[in-house]
Length: 525
Image 1 (cartoon, rainbow, N blue to C red):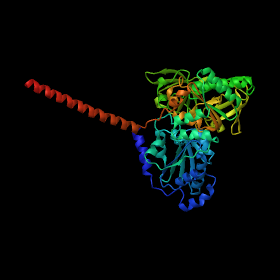
Image 2 (cartoon, rainbow, N blue to C red):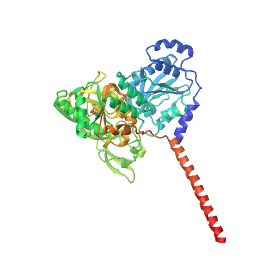
Image 3 (spheres, rainbow, N blue to C red):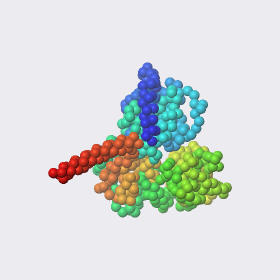
Image 4 (cartoon, rainbow, N blue to C red):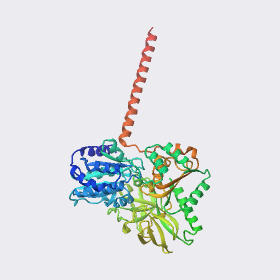
């Protein structure tokens, strides 16, 4: 990781002041007339990026600052200069949002997996949600850049960070990457809510929470059952364009089930329901975990995003874990045809791990896709409403975009209720109203933090309500910083501690020797 981080920074610095601006001064002056719809800060950010002579630049914007609108203007100007503009993102949802800016996009993983032998011309790669990327991904991406290519990293260092190791977007900025900033929030339409979001964007969590309390947007309900019932009731009273955010999967699933039942009882969702088997990601397993047999359990479902001729596994295939040999680090999996295959998971990368669970869906239920459905061009975490479902698992869903999709659940068993989501899943979405669940006692403390409250509250256009067990401790709990350390920081920290230890050891040794000499002198006398 140290080598990768040093290499990333070295490549970023090596590309500084080495290129012509994305658009010349004359071209930027001509293009300025097409930017009248942008705010002053958006126009300033676009101008800074188009005038940059660096191969790698950044655009850091607070939540709701209109990054998509700014990127649309950058794309248009770059294409006028002969650049092929391509969008990349660590999630399929973020990639789809880039499409809204007119930028042809894919996931960063897909980009790294494909061959680039026929990539002619010069490219401007726009890497969105860069705070979610890993050091290794960015390192591989940078090594694939051609001399004439440019890269624009886009994100928000205050939002959630990626699961895998590293925080390259923030590290690049700290190392001197030229970065344009979008600090003017335009999403929130309620002035009081906007003020609280601005405080959160500037790291003033305690002040923001107190502000939300004064606005009557924080509700203390110590009893867990009563608190969840209050969230469910609030949702049912105004379900349109309302999103529930809960930090952990256990509470999210419970809230989803309760809302489903409540909407059935008031007639918003059909009483008749169909029981289907779906796959739920084992989100606690990181990429490193998936290399160790001990992390798997019999019955787990494994999907291979990359096949293996050596093992005999096809790309996209699903298998079930039969046995786990922890000592020899071997997995035995059963294929759909009954054949068993044994292999070392450390030798086979590109896998996703799931558990089978049952869900009861009804006509009218809000649902979310939990992995991309490429056949239907649906991104991960996209939301829709069930319009038809039968006992054979045939579904018709109207997506929030208005498009209808039809499929059998066995073709794509990655579906869940869409009433409540985690804050990680909510990143990149917008709703009119957001209901936020914060349990400071039963939720793991690392999930209650400053990034949770910033991301969750900033999703809302008009209203955000927080439901908690202890309003008095809320500001303290939500002020928790869970920022990841980079390897270079850890190295510096360890080196500093070692230096202090060496100084203290030398001092102690000197004192011991001094005492010994004094004792020897007194014996002589």
